[in-house]
Amino acid sequence: MLDSTELKSKIPGWGIDLDPKNRPGVPREKTSPHGTGAHWDVPDRQIPRVKIYKSSERRSLTPVFGTSCPPKGLSGVLRDYAYSLSEARKSHWFLLIIADRVDEVEGILGSIFQLRPHNPLKEMGLATEFKGEGFRSRFGQHRADVRRMRMEALLVLGLGALLLGRKFIFRNPDKQSTEGLSTDRRKFGRRSSDRQKVA
Amino acid sequence: MLAMTYRGPYRVRTENKPMPEIEHPNDAIVRVTRSAICGSDLHLYHGLVPDTRVGMTFGHEFTGIVEDIGSTVQNLKVGDPVLVPFNISCGSCFFCKKELYSNCHNTNPNATAVGAIYGYSHTTGGYDGGQAEYVRIPFADVGPWKIPDWMDIEDAVLLTDACPTGYQAAEMGEIKENDTVVVFGAGPVGIFAAKSAWLLGAGRVIVIDHLDYRLDFIRNYAQVETINFTQIKDIVLHLKKLTDYLGADVCIDAVGAEADGNFLQTFTGVKLPMQAGAATALNWAIDSVRKGGTVSVVGVYGPTFNLVSMGDVLNKGLRINANQASVKRYLPRLVEHVKEKRLSPKDIITHRIPLEEVADGYHMFSSKLDHCIKTLLIPPKAA
View 1 (tube, chains in turn blue, purple):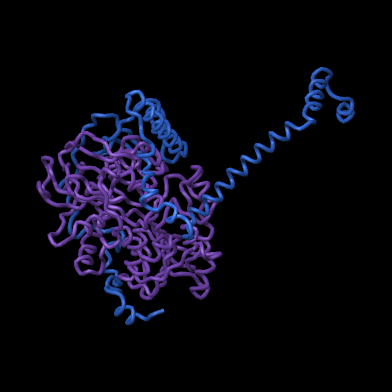
View 2 (cartoon, helix red, strand yellow; view 1 turned 90 degrees about the vertical axis):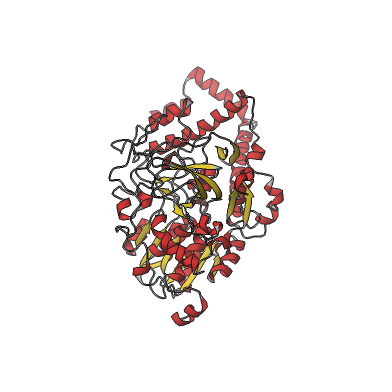
């Protein structure tokens, strides 16, 4: 490790903000020496012209708010309910995520009804896979995400194999006799050995 | 006007939207000259942020020219070139008065746990962002900062978020002379955190990532040591060995919710929304820092809970400092650093693309193609 003198000569500006007086965030809470720019004590209020949700942890609507994409459709109903719950409730956030997925489906259906269907390939920017050398950027580069994707693929394949295997087991020759047994059981109740166990 | 719009996870496009309007007497309308895609935009793009609605315009890093102002705006005039901090703040609430602009209580009706941010879902207020030709700026007398004549617009756009966030990350590390600082993440914020650690007097700076091209870049740009964690069996143990088995004085999490490196964390936090993102980098930071050390968190996590080694925080007596950057309070000092060439933010920009090709920009940045570090979007009228 280099000492301070060596670091000063090697790195432009080294230590220039070492003194806490030069650090804008020290102390963490302080009055701005330049003022905040606000020339009001209480700000004017924006008038809501679309539906704006308010966190239930707030007393009233804030003086300003965004008006992008007002709630609509089924996703809007879900958002209505989500905002009736406090931010401390995990269900508030999970419902909003579910509403987002519903909103996405509504967007797709809407575009089809308006005869302007989406072009998912273009919207996903997949052309850059060729322009941006997708293969070379990913492989042979020690990328953790590529390793993870391999694990995920293995997991999916493993689950698939498990499901197929299960299906195969149920299809084995014993299946028929098992089915026969269960029919007998339905007809005649428990086997005598079962009855003995109960006794 | 032309604007980027969100269509669903991994799908965005540009389309024509109505022009933004003055909706409050202290609003301004800004014609965007440059906007950037931020690493945290990827959380929206991947559908991980609750209440991200189809049709929304993202973008919280942008510069522009004032096109129109509301009746009470005093500090700006039409034609002023401005950089706009990503936080929307009123300048007069309990938090703004303490310079905690990112925690403003008067601008986000949808949540109390987070302040308002441009183009960052309805969870942060439902404001359209700057990846468009025009954008509405609430409390125009508080947020926007006039760009000095000598400043390059590309330096200015990075002073709206990435650079101040990196600087604040280092500052929250409470770095003392010759401290060893470990930065997790070699993205734009990690790069500026590492660079800022030197300004704050660090004696040794080590950066951890898994992308070789980013580590190569940061090694040259910020003169730091780098480690690709995929080439090490146990990154925490490795860092302990490098620090005489004590641990680093300061660890910075500049990664956040979409960290790789632990399959269980990524699977439960990113693939399934069972926790608010993968806390891999945060746990590594907690485990790599020395007892009594400081962990600084600027990586973005969702609003629910995470699997975090809280017992280690307690038993090691750690201090955890975290917040979104209060950009406005850092601008005077950072502008000075840029002027004196101690920081050169624009050097990290690798891609400049037309706004119309926003889908390509997102995919390239998200998939880390073509050695992408920072992408700028250029609206048609600003080209």
